[in-house]
Amino acid sequence: MDEELPKGLLYNDNHSWVKVNGDVVEVGITKPFANSVKEFVYIELPEQGKEIKKGETYVSMESVKWSGHLESPVSGEIVEVNNALFDEPSLLNQDPYKHWIMRVKLLDKDELNGLMDADQALANLSCKLG
Amino acid sequence: MKWRLLPMMELNGAMQMAIDEAILTARARHKVPNTIRFYTWKPSCVTIGYFQSAQQEVDLEKAKQAGVDVVRRYTGGGAVLHDNEVTYSIVLTESDVPSNIIDSYKKLCLPIVYALRLLGLKAEFAPINDILVSGRKISGNAQTRKQGVVLQHGTLLLKVDIAKMFSLLKVPNEKLRDKVIERASARVTSLEQELGRSVAVDEVIAALEKGFTAVLGISLERGKLTRFESELAKRLAREKYATKEWSFMR
Image 1 (cartoon, rainbow over the protein chains, first blue to last red):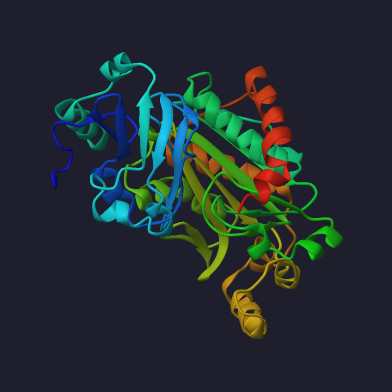
Image 2: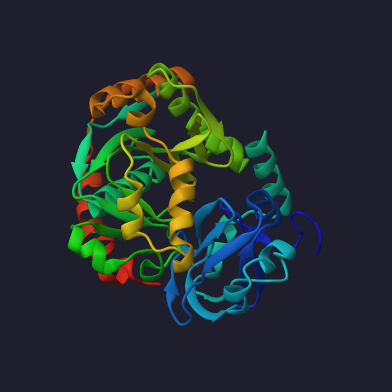
């Protein structure tokens, strides 16, 4: 998966992707975003076992000169957190689609309908960059 | 485009950080327009970046003795002593700044460069996020982004007291403390130092207002915090920025 915005994933408007696999989804950040902010140096990961709501901050990150707080594209229980990223946040720069940030057990699958597919996300991105 | 300009506020660090975040949230919910405000710190305050550790960056005992607050920011970057300075904050939608980070800093720093030139100084933007006068730093700036909104706040030094700064901030290696101070003295300057006179807060704010309107091509409409913002700010100050859990979470 080395495309900019791989097909088969869903995207929100805030640099995050969702990979659906039954009731549990993986959530991570997109490559165009990782590329634009350069190397991540710090990351604050979500807490395993916590309930998260769509739109709430799930990850806070600082790159060489950027800092921000990203919104969760889904609601549900955080069943797993990719703790390896804490020691090496730059893994997200190397392959943001391999290194998911959290796995979430969905509260409501219908919520996924509000996300974009790769084509829509790409159109959205080009219009932002333009 | 019309932006909102809030009145100058002199408050403690927890409240200032809470107000900045409350405006960011209000902007994200489309409750308020893009907003600029200017403020000063009472008492003086050391802020640390979102990812820093207060214990590692600040001599907490000395800060307490000096009556200086210590507060974690929502933005990234390093530790800063806010003493004799004017601070500005800008909250605007992400679509109003270039997507490139350096360009976005540049866009929001150039108004400050313009203001400094109005005050008679040859200022320049130094990527990524500094403003220099005669090659020395006079303004540092930090950004964060959330829910499609950018918060940038930064300082403009009226006066600088390097000795005080380093009595409160820790240095990576104590043996090199003198060298660090010497280097900082050579690299940091202030309005007073450059103009050879003391400069009033009002004079700086007037120049900054002109800078923002001229460079960003906007008009500033005087307004105040909405009820939503001021209530959220009070709650954020009380439950977040003024708490030990927040400031000492790392």
